[in-house]
Length: 314
Length: 311
Image (cartoon, rainbow over all chains, first blue to last red; front, side, top):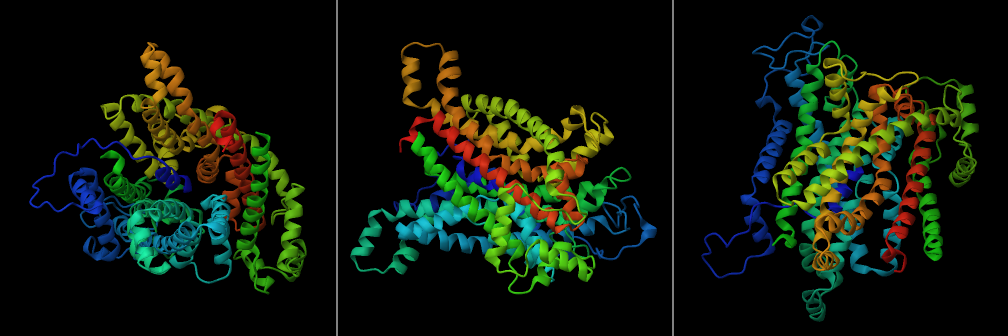
């Protein structure tokens, strides 16, 4: 899964068929900022709107699943096993007699929670490592880069299997926090490299030299001058990484290392329905479709933002 | 060239030590309580004092962390990966499982290269055309679908419902039984190869040497087939090596779902049966394979592209 992020980061942007014509209704002569330009491009990109709508849908599902279904995903009765879809249960019932639609909707919560918190943790690590490594250079950069290489030298799923197994053995609970820590601690490398290289290119700009000459300290230069100008590629990588984290969470739960049975997660549902797919395939298809759609939404969103921010296309 | 290889080997030693240390620390750092390590090794099953004794001795849990790591390292260098909880030497299991996984990976990589690179070249030449946009959308879909979705769904549709392929492989799989799992395994690589090829072809088409080749009157077939392709494929060839890490992660799921007795399946089963020693042994092996693949790729890169070795 990690190569998914790295490829997305390494690759130059996809072609954007929408031509950047003359500015729409240019009312003032005020020059637009890079962010303003990007936003103007984004608004015209249908992919951006489709992805945003999907992300919004999944986030609402995670926050207030009650809106979508009145059924309780945990109330199951074997008497309803594999009952066909009806007005009450749109997708029918699964092997245990649980409402499939309700389980699928409630499954969004675990995915989004894990994805967002893991992204925050990984983002914080990547920000600190990438920023200091790029800004200070020299031996700091050397040590941090070698360390990044080492973490990058282990495929994320393999490391997550070992760490997840260990944390589960420690009886610290197998809730979402274990998975969040596993993903956050292991998933920051690509973002940190992207941050480092954009900090290095921002560091040599004239405005940084000007700020330094005016007597600004390291902290001020780093956070007021360099960071805002180095943030865009980082945000793109983190958006795509969020999709990746959701995918790895489901994979870990599928393997039985991530979330465990009483929890409701797409990975768990896919895992338990795979073995009974010959009897009934709907319990496999429903969570699979939602999982793929969610990952797709975040990757599309990241792609669209990258297209908008990449100056090469203008 | 020689200096490059030596420098790269030294770096590799450093990464190797770091990566194995990290994997080992993730599993065995115990803050003075071997009991917790043992619990994570055996999972939720109860342990007798004799088993605790045996595991403590086997992993030298009473020694300091660095001594333990030393023993682990010694084992790895002797290609000794320990024994599983069921008592089988992990080295034997690996020897049995490798050939199957390699066959599966060969199918996956062939499929990915054949279709991915071709699609990428065509899309790169006709940028922004219909084919290009279709490729972009299709590859985006392939990248987004997690293996845990693709494998069972493909098994259901092509194996069970349509019956085109055998749904599971089992004991001693034939090449035919490995085709569908191979396609599933290769699909993510297909998407990434085709995107890489497309970008690099599109970039090289604008290069000076292509203009020169056109200007001196070479036929387009030769400009694209020789000048552009040879240079565009360098990053793709090297990416295939890096991609082995992704293939191995994918193989855990694919082999688990399709019941293929390869390396990934052993790991899959080890996780499901909470066999800690088995998991640690196989993960160590896969990490080593990944590092070696990266090393080979880097050297290959230097061979293919002289600019790298004279930096």
